[in-house]
Image (tube, rainbow, N blue to C red):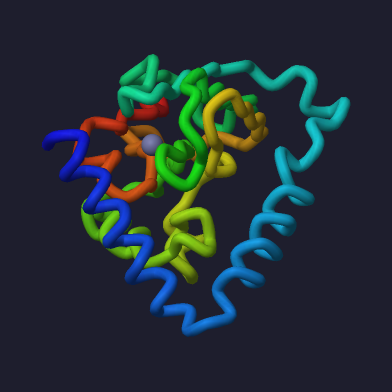
Length: 176
Ligand code: ZN
């Protein structure tokens, strides 16, 4: 897909999302942003200092720096998403969303297109998500701590910004 057509796709998606909000979109978007900022990173506590760190970089070329990482069942993981790009969040935002087994990634990102006000996480999708970072613009970083699932196997992680999964922003968390 060319850069121009991608941009048009994104603009179209934003248009749909704003229309869906029906007018009060601007205020809502800002308060949503404030909310997600305040709950950011859920302050890494001392108890989590021993969590093992996994760093994933994302860039303006819509690529993650790793395609796979392995964890042990029930292991505490500190996941750092480092957006090393420079483009703003509204046009080139990145997150890491780790999906539970059995969740269809394509359907998840299809639903996410309409969820701009929720940082592209489909409303009501909490039980489909093992863990997720904030949506980040260029130069931003987010750290989350979570417990790996007890069930061994492969778990998809992806960026839920419209179009990015299709362009390859995805990978596998291997629980073994
Ligand atoms: Zn992305």
